[in-house]
Amino acid sequence: MELFPAAVFNPSKASPPRTARGPVAGGAIERLPFTIRRVETEADLLKAVRIRHAAYARHVPDFARSLAQPEAADYDADTIVLLAESKLDGTPIGSTRIRTNLYRPLGVEESIVLPDWLQDKRLVEATRLGIDEGRVGRMVKIALIKACFMYCEDNAIDYSVATGRPPVDKQYDQLMFVDVFPELGLVPLRHVGNIPHRVMAFEIATFQQRWAEARHPMLNFFFNTHHPDIDVGPIAPPSLALPQRPVPPAVRPRVELAFA
View 1 (tube, one colour):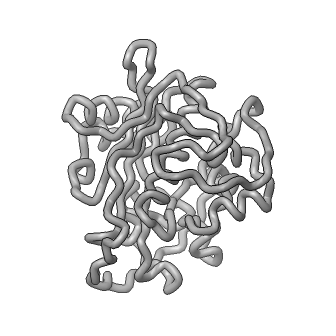
View 2: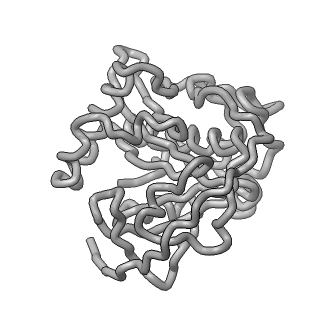
């Protein structure tokens, strides 16, 4: 599936960074046909689970069976779930879950030890991305990705860590994520049903600079356009220090190549 629809390709030069919750000076304000907000109630969570399960069932039906109900991770204090809903009728049309490493290792660390350049850094891992099908769904995906980056910027996150199975991993290439383990290829991951994934990372501090230098097609959408319909919730205190976490036991990743 195409990550960036042709209708939103719009290269631009760099602009001043946005302020949290507000538009960039001189930037555009754009309304979306849907809202993205933080899940706060059980009813909202069930909506997110419904769209999540349907999306995974289209591509990995065996694993999707484990996603028919909320997961324990949905309730964790270091996790937020984002829900996209149609303004027309309130239908859930997209969702993703963001987890930090402020209190415990990321889900990917159940399967592999991250390299030194990601140790003692503030990290997030976005998982369980699911969207409705169709062209509006592609826009929802882009907006959910922007919401994740807004959360990272607002909460002083150093790196976003992502895992993608082929061909989804190519979408992270388009976003300019880099391989954490380029020599390994695909790594089976426990928190995604042992399905082989690429492990990738994106540095938040150089986000705008790298996209501007590359004349990235989504630069305007992410940095020069304010979307009032995207709300990632309250900002954590920027002085929050990264707690000392127990070092996970060294897990030698099992190299298992798969092509799809």
